[in-house]
Length: 294
Image (tube, rainbow, N blue to C red; front, side):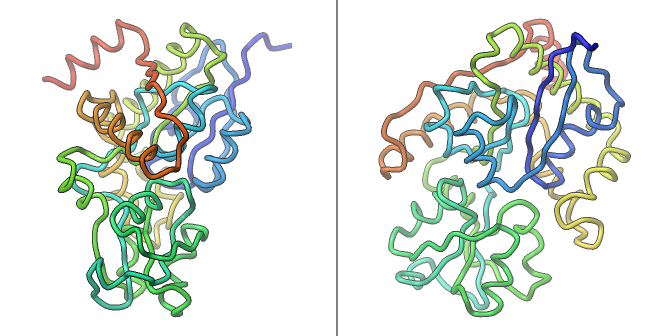
C-alpha cells in the first residue's frame, strides 16, 4: 500500500496550462512522496470547484481569488500573465467600445478575468455567460453582438471570420500601467507551508523541464485547446507559459493587488483579500532568480 500523499491537480483544457504539467503528467519528472492525479475543465467550472474545495492544486481566474482566499494560497508558479495583451473582444464588424452600450456580449463567466475586464471597460453592456469555446460561434450566428475570447480562442477567432474590437489586456495596461494577471495557480491552505513549498518546487521543476525541452512539450500540449488543426497552440504557450509563469515577478504581484481593489470596487468581492503567496524553497527561488537574471 502506497504511503504517498495523493494530490489532485486541476487545470484548464488549454495548451499553456497543459505545458506546465507536461513533465509530471507524462512521467518525465518523478514526484517522490506524492501520487498526482490530473483533471482538466473549463475555467468557470474550476472557479466553482475551488469554492467547494474539490482540488488540492487548481487553476482559477485571478478575479475569483477573493472568494477563495480563506481556503487557498497563491502559488508563484503557473500564473498566466499578459503584458499588453489578454482577453480579446471580437465582433462580426469593427466597432468601438462606446458602440457596444446595451449590446449582448458573451463572456466565459462571472467571475472570470475576461468577464470582469469587459464590465470594467464598458459597464453598460449586457453580459451573457457562455462556455468559452462556444462564444465565437454565437457571435457568428448573431446570437451575440460581440464576445470575449480567452485561452486559444483569442488567437483563433480570425479563422471564424471575426474581427478584433479591442484587446482588453491592452486596455487594462493602458489605463493602469500594469501587466494583467489573467489566471492563478492555487494550493490548499490546509496543506501548510512546508508541503505547499514542496508542491511549488515540483510544479516549477515541471515547467522548467518543459521550457528546456520545448519541442516535445509543445507537441504534447498542443493536443489541448484547438489542437493541431487550430494552429495556435505554440504561439499561445509562448504568451502565457514563460518567465512570468516560472516565478511571479513583483510588478505582477502589484497588479494582482490592484486587481483585488477593482474587484471589490465593482461589487464582485465583499472584501479585499490578503495576497498570500507560496514561493517554494529558498534554494530553488535563488536558483531560478539567478537563471532568469542571466
